[in-house]
Length: 111
Length: 285
Image (cartoon, rainbow over all chains, first blue to last red; front, side, top):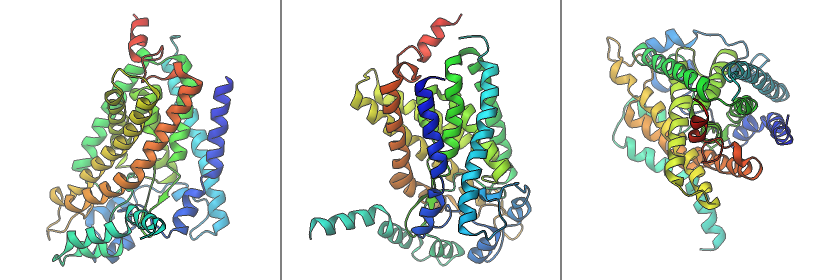
């Protein structure tokens, strides 16, 4: 690994540790979730009904670590922060592994 | 008015507190339908880059799966031909970077959140096809492991953020810099590249869910999937990406390019150096 690459990895690790800012700042500024990304209950409240097709598809997939949160909702603040950091490390670990394997296979002809 | 007052006022306007309310009032003046209540409760604008399951009907998500798979196949062929071994470690880093930057939700005070994607800078540094691969892997992991973005909507989300965004960003960068590779010109080109790449991706996303009420309604004429029409979806997505998230993406793109130019100038794919597409193509049979 070159010195430059090492520096970049350190930057990425620092980013991973700082990720909780991405949940703490929105809370501080009283900003909700992304526009339109509302749950079924909220939609029902807003529209007065839940669209049929949406209701059918919405729970199609139960992600193992829903919303980057390991604990059951509602989780305490400290658990949210720890989960978010852990999710970040897990996420980059899996992404790096997959991308590395795929790209290594494709670049094998020595260029 | 003192300078301080002017500044606070400007910040306020920038942060949309006023723009948003007057815009919503304008948009829904005289319309007493359910949609005004949506915007009454949730201010207009915001992220929504990761479309969840249920917001797109099969008429939309199936074709977009097809398009994304087509781009993955092309990316594979292209990268087999020109992916350089020295770029491999950077590709892995690019995926990690894109994953992390999407976790930094940026708040619009009192409103909603959004985030940068990083696809633009990846396209400039490593090439647009490389960005297709790296960002697609990130989006697939986000959907499967963390439920961020739907499984049915995965094709659509990959199309918007891992296809449209890198190619728009890369095209804008090449176009804006032209033949000149001076420092200032490159910085401006990089900013525009990130800014417009994210904006166009957001508009595609808005168009996809905005057409749902047109193409899929039930027997009682109620929408089956995403309920907001184009006239709500497009401005909602455009405004905050124009004023907030696009600016963040632009700055990230600009600063990272500057850092790479300083340390590993020759690595950058989007320049005429040894890693550029012309030189790679010439080297290979």
